[in-house]
Image 1 (cartoon, rainbow over the protein chains, first blue to last red):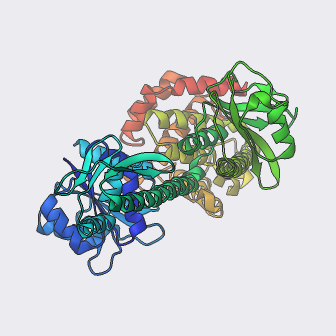
Image 2 (cartoon, rainbow over the protein chains, first blue to last red):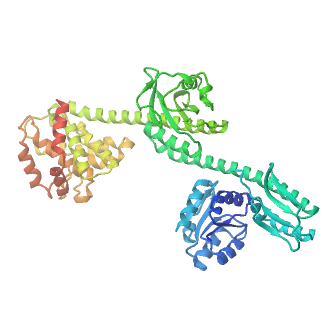
Image 3 (cartoon, rainbow over the protein chains, first blue to last red):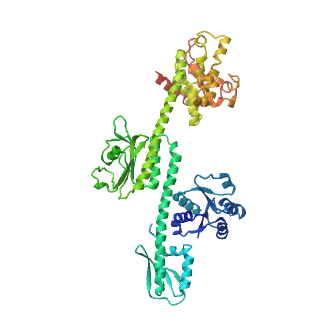
Amino acid sequence: MPKILVVDDEPHIRYLLELTLEELEEEGVEVITADNGQAALEIIRDEEPALVFLDVMMPKMSGFDVCNAVKNELELGDVYIVLLTAKGQEFDKQRGQEVGADLYMTKPFNPDDVLAKAREVLKR
Amino acid sequence: MNSITLGKVLKRRPFSPLVTRLVTTLATPLVIEEADGTLLLATEGERAVTCYPVTVQGELIGRVYGDEKASLLASLLSYHAEIELERKHLGNETLHKYREITLLYETADKIPFCMEPREIASFLLEQLRQVITFTSATVLLQDKETGLLEVLLAEGNEYRPGARLEPEGIMGAVWASGKGEIVNDAATDPRFVNRPTTVSSLMCAPLHSKESRIGIVMLTSATQRVYLAEDLKLFTTLASQAAVQMENAALYLQLKAAFYTMVYTLAETIEKRDPYTGNHTKRVMEYSLALGRTLNLSDEQLQRLELAAVLHDIGKIGVRDDILLKQSKLTEDEFQQIMRHPVFGEEIISRIPQLSDIIPGVKHHHERFDGRGYPDGLSGAQIDITARIIAVADSFDAMTTDRPYRKGFPFEEAFEELRKNAGTQFDPEIVEAFFASDVMDAYFTANARLA
């Protein structure tokens, strides 16, 4: 069963992403959540989700650090990582590239785009 | 989206461990099942027969079997499911807002790149479709002369672009008041005018730009829908953005047209001084564009080429009449004076910042491919492509038209001259393009237009 991991320290963002992805759950996709980078990293290592929506600005371990650990240290290149950044906040695209992120989206996100992306990635 | 299942409610953290603890503490046989009978949780022991329903807004979503303690659990689950449902409603509403916000951001980002009214209208409908459900849409602009509303774009209905309508019915009312309207049951509205396309519900918003109203947009649904005030608000906001862009685009196009007129007028001043050249400028421009298109220049390059070709001889304005208009052979010194015109041209044009990118085309149209031209002695690719093209077009026209002191060459001789000088005076690729292009068509078109 394919898995999607949602990582954000803000509960309402996690909930809204879960809600957006709800119709995939009905199709057999498991949606897991984590509220910090450390927990996210453990889940990714143990469960190898197909797709991760990863907040960049989180206390302790940032989304960049998590992404870097997954792509460059654990070498889990197949895990598709979407970085989530707040609209208006300067996003360091070069940094995103260095840590190997596959895509970045801004918050508030367009639920249609999130769902379409998830479907696309899961189809692979 | 009222769907909520007890299984989901039970799975959600931190509620799920809480329920587990509660069940352990109650220490009594319990069974929790989904409304459809799917087992969700069962403790050890004999299954009780008493059943307590778990409901949300009066609807059964599951059952708890057990003694009277189970009734407490059923109530708690009902209460929590109710909260969960509310949360879901709020969440979905927030997601809808997210959809709207991202749409507004996207519109603000992309709409400035639309320059044609139709393109703007079609972009508006595309954006609206993402948040509002409708089966037909019409964008109308007022025709200033007749006061009628002219169809600019229509989708899913019988209107044809260009058709002019009296502002009547609901459309007329919105046009007159300038305020958007929702009509959810069109059949009962006395203003409703029946037309071939079925309309059950509709929304209509004005296209407002700054102070004036320039048109309206109508969205209709063939099946009954309930459009909400917030739908109309978003619709109106997007429609005004489109209206403002339509006005900006119109101003831009006007400004551009005025600029081109100025450039052409400037070029004409020099033609007027030397009437013998008789429309030389216009022909050079036509030939140049024909060559540019054959050489697959980009739109931006073609635009530069057009302006440079039109202004290529503007510097002749700085050459004295007695030399410029002299009918006999020029002395060496007089020829030196004539040869300064590309630099004079540069000096004049450099005062107009919007024309700075055509300077190479004007200044270097007398450079030669082999480097023996003037004023800078550039060669090959050092010479801007527009200048290399104008050089060929200019020479061809000079050869084929009559001058006070000589008749023009026949075409065949001029063709021969171009071939002979390819690689020395002219860029061979451009000479090749000359014979592959519709330059001769351009010649006849130019002459037919001037006749």
